Amino acid sequence: MGDINVLAVLKDSATLAVLAVCSLVSITFAIERWWYFRKASGSSDEVLGHVHKLLESGKSDQAAAYCQKRGSAVSQVVQYGLLHAGRGRRDLEELMGTKRLEEKLKLEKNLAVLGTLGNIAPFIGLFGTVVGIIKAFQDLALAGGGGPSVVAKGIAEALVATAGGLMVAIPAVIFYNVFMRKVKTLGVEMEVASTRLVVMLGAK
Image 1 (spheres, one colour):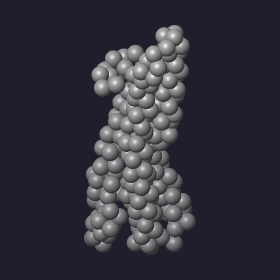
Image 2 (tube, rainbow, N blue to C red):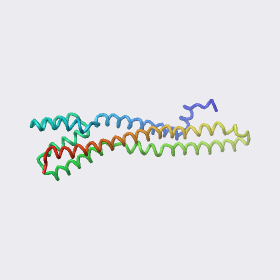
Image 3 (cartoon, rainbow, N blue to C red):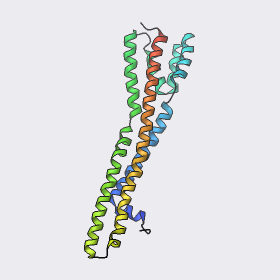
Image 4 (cartoon, rainbow, N blue to C red):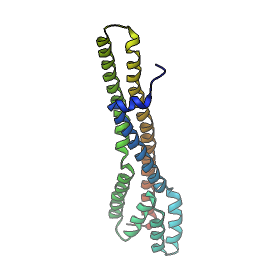
């Protein structure tokens, strides 16, 4: 069993080929989400602190420009609130609520792919293992004897599919959980920023 050629197994196994594609997709989306969250992250205190100073100086246009330049999820919500600062309190709260939902959708984009891969990859690997074991016992039947040594290599190669499934699933689940935690954190930051901005603007 020590002379198993992993590349040869990958070439001969459709299941491992599928898992290789799943792994590539998982890594691609994980990098894309990491880069997006890197730009979208931001503290509500930092943004509102700067905006508050500009508003006190009567520079509302500069405050909106500052938020647009930062590009974080919190700053986008604050900017949207500043653009509609002349509206009543209820209308302003509803508008900012819709903006938070919009930003949340952007944050959650492609996370379903990571979650799905994390759930199905072990089953794909298990399917490949079952098929491989069936093939190994068929080889034993055709050989007409020889004992466990006839199927040992085939079973070992079949188990590679299970290992491959876990190798795809574990990182995907980790990335999914980390990113969902960031979505939750940024959601709270956006809600806090919205409430504080409404009070700062003195909307009635």
